Length: 266
Image (tube, rainbow, N blue to C red; front, side):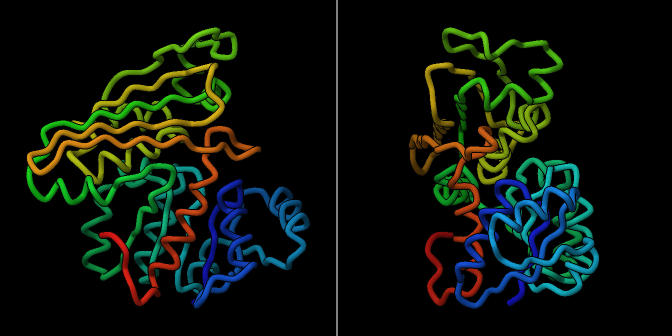
């Protein structure tokens, strides 16, 4: 199956590396990048020929499209994939959260949009719990200041995070509000909201912690079927501290699952 990657930053590059190395049943068709110059530099570093296409050409010629672009591009990418009946894998929980109307359109067109687990864990347990009653979901994200300093909310509030000497709570609200305030930082919160009780009802705290070197997430769930906590400490990608290395790996795992004879988890 031919795979196209839209967005060629840190996540898209890692996915391309894996496909070049070899993923059974899948081959890299090409990429779409908003900066051809930057994309060509990355391609040179990979030492492998990768073709750059416009979005429409890529989608028309691929079986699976992987969205690694900023959330603002999600609707355009998803709409074109739905129209052409192409499977879309995305890491943009925030993009999905802003475009929930696409679910019905995708259903009518018999097309699937898959949200990879990204940098969070336990979505299977949340989805299972949501089949009955979930009483509450609370998520706490803690990141080093450099992983949050470029977020729109931080800039708008004039927060000087790099001067922090101790942990600081910088946001408290719903996952919906957090996804809008930190679109590139808390896709995990959007994913937790979508999998569980709903983003509006999912409580979210975001802390900037100068003592941390890893992006950490803790999810606490109280349901009538189970009470559980999940936590993860993600190693940052070198060029984008706000993104965990495991995010790109989750996309590859998701891709493998499309053709695997065994499906592990929901």
